[in-house]
Image 1: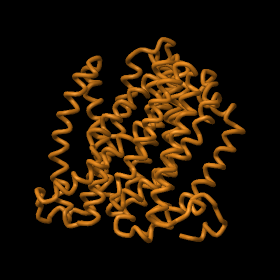
Image 2 (image 1 turned 90 degrees about the horizontal axis):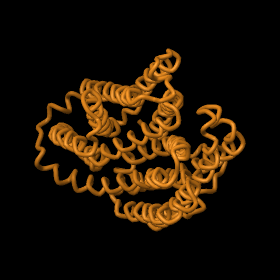
Image 3 (image 1 turned 90 degrees about the vertical axis):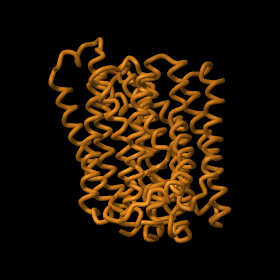
Image 4 (image 1 turned 60 degrees about the horizontal axis):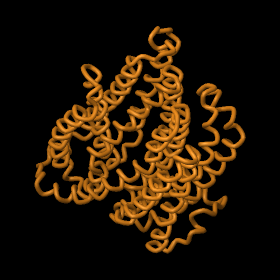
Length: 426
């Protein structure tokens, strides 16, 4: 599959999935209310962080190594199975220590959610190597659609404990279980379908000892990138949760989630750029600059749209308690755009194994966020956190742009100045 086809298939299906995910988010907020939904999404963020730490960047290590050595598919798979066993034990231990309030059936589904999430990332890496973007994204789209239908049924069914003004603990537990079932079904399908399509790859002789060092040396650097990127996206939530009230936190969480949904599109593009860059970095440099220009046009259009309809659309979708979302979202929107450009540059540098550049840019971004939030959020509240997010991500983007210019010779005006003939440049 060529780059243009991969981009179209990967982004097309994932945009549809993103829309269903957005509907899921709205339904969950409507079911739980502003305060309980804030707690639910905060818990999901914690579980996602744990799965990110557990993966230690191995998914990109898989893509990088198997792209260069496709004959090692079986060996890599056996290594991953061993790692998954150890990660499952570690997950159970961590939850027992830090989430003692979660017990019984809910505890089981928390483990399922975390580990299925990890496995989906690993299996998706093999799909990226084979450029199987269509089947990868159709499965995710179908699962999210089923979740949307089920949540809508819950919303209109009139179940007492879901409609009670004092939301019970059971409602949050139910949402965790629904999330766990969805990711579990996706994981099962992806594993079986990949094996069915490429079972001959698993008949090759497996020599895991010779590849372990190669994968881990790349993955550990990528792990640092992944963790820092996660913290850049969510560190401000800690300060808002600590120094602001629940209403402000609920509004901030939803504004951040919409910003993260806008990052899905550049993230999908980056996911395609990465495997293509591994074996053709020089040819891809110009394409990366072109995609940055296209993103600039898309984000500028979105910004104008949100300026016009933001005050009405947020409260219409989520309810009257979300009046603060507009100002939060507008203040943080530039940060989302800067981070989007950074994601494309990150994928390029990962493809050429220059992850040290990425680590420094994200580390500086993270330091700016936590240090500025520490001093300013207690005094100026949630708006300070939103503005700081934008400033910090501008600094990180600028560092990556300078490194990209130095390596490729592509000037900064080629990154941002869009021309009509760019649409015919693929």
